[in-house]
Length: 285
Image (cartoon, rainbow, N blue to C red; front, top):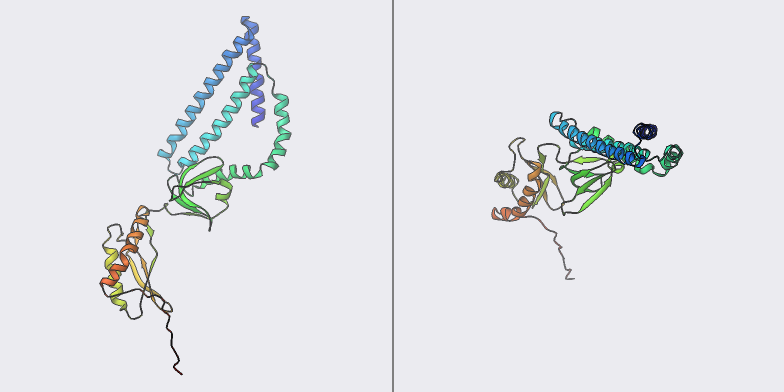
């Protein structure tokens, strides 16, 4: 369809140039240059209007996300510039009809050769429509895949920035065909932490100490209430589950602070963590 429209634009521009030359007896090259400049300016105006129009839609309709807007803008820009280039060449009398006809056959061959790229293109459209993440969200793609903050997305790939400032470029096809974990989509996250103490330590006292420790942190949300409970009994330790709720931006702040203060807090209250011990018995006989 795009090839037919481009061919029609090329033929129409060429006919218009010929009519102007015949009517006003102006050198063809001069008319061609003027028409080409006008087409270029028109394409710039159209793409600028399209960019402004679709960029403002997410402000009025939240379901139409910035990623979706960016995808639509880029698709329209590509179509406009393809038609504009073909029309400009037509203004100079360059007939692209045989070339465009050949592209129909070549397109079939390229379709098989570029299946992965085409799959990424359509996967990008599905990502934009379903909106599993937004720019600025922290995501994990695949069970053992890459994780980071979404910094950009285009027709072919998603760009992530990791916690250690590494840049990952992941194809849309891979993203869409894997599980996407979005840790920033909601306004709260649960911290899942475990604490091991000795069997000789008092369970109720340990719970009170752990609850007092996390209640000191202003980042801990009161609703849902933090949970501190005995999770399991290991071979040489009682395992406590500590599960407070925080905002996504405070997740690692609380995690590192809790683990940094945990050991000193336990020991200050007469509680300690177990460690492996080897008991050797010597037979005197």
